Image 1 (cartoon, rainbow, N blue to C red):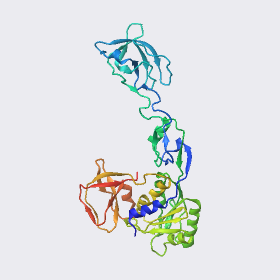
Image 2: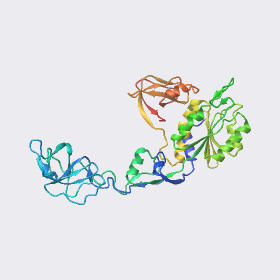
Image 3: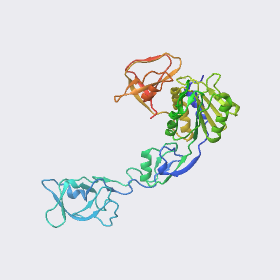
Image 4: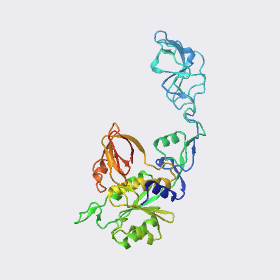
Length: 401
């Protein structure tokens, strides 16, 4: 039985080198960048106004107040998107809007709320407040300098990355290809939803749970039909899955029972088992193997075990397959609201719920077949073997959403 860290290390060492492709930026959210991305332009690309108001020379309104307004001649108007070819002269102001180019000669913008139109018809503006040099001015390149690295290889693009790249004029990006992932569930007792159950049958749920987790890791799930507990049927299903997909994930059929055929069928197809059994709870009967440059993840059949082993062992592989630098689950700290205990000789990844104050509680009974506590859970707490943690202890909560 292998320790979790050793298992993950072995899996990640088996991942083939990623292959890249060029895609439109609009399709790139969640994808892993294959090469560094440089800023194509300064952001902002020109000095501009941060408010609606009037461009001025700061020294000319330094004494302005509501009791002693300063009057300046209105010399023009610059709307956002317009190119202003003139220059501000002493004694003048120019109407300007948020995002408008700062005219030459100006060094500050006074908000329109701090001004009013002069009563006389000479097109003068009264300034009721002072402005410091460069007040309300956004400077060219103050956000990003042209040529600066804005995304590093191995980063997953989020919505904020997409916004930054779009603002800089990027239209397409080079990312690493996503793996196609076959999802198989084994078990003669399993039934597809929507049809009545015969005695002894249950509805299959693992593929439904794992498909969105695979998609959340930016991989491409393909759901295959349920495989009965039969050696030939298992071989045929695995053969089809490896023919169609880069990675195969099975649920069930990896223990030591007479009806567990995944390991033997995989080897008969030429696959090589790297290890079997991981020292964690839930999820000890876990299989990892290689079939050429393709991978097999044999998850336990119990739904919580399948869910947890996917998160801890398969998810990192899907991300690294795409070249991701960070493959661990996101984590946050919390405070136990109640004692936690693990009497087992294996690490126990306990399902937990968190409240708005960061208090951590058990999400319910921790048996590996109970989906109700998984549905209530918002994370996992890694409890070491034969350990009790008192209420008030600080713990790390592993999140999947």
